[in-house]
Length: 150
Image (cartoon, rainbow, N blue to C red; front, side, top):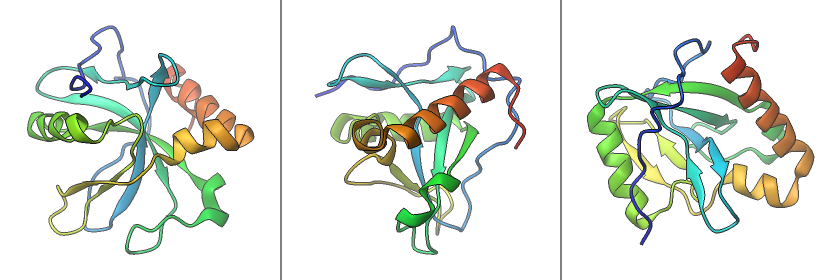
């Protein structure tokens, strides 16, 4: 069983533009991760214990959170600053659904609802759609550098 995600205190996401906020609209997101080998893509978290932060690729979906494959290139890379309770919930999910290998459906009713998906679009893109994966990775790099406008 994988270890729960940890805060990576060496990363500072304070200067990022654009934020993901869970809402009544269901969103499908992939957590950004550093590649630590094909079997252990580890999610990246920064910030503080009170306000953990990560980056997500928010994928285009219909109202029920189903992915719209023809619109994958419209994904947004956004900062997600969550509550400590949400971070704990993600840690629990990570034990059964490795967050580097599974997307999350976030939001709906209640807005704090989080449901793991069967796979990660970001991981699949890295394996099969190198151009799309490169675009997402470039967006993550630009967001981290503070040069991407959202």
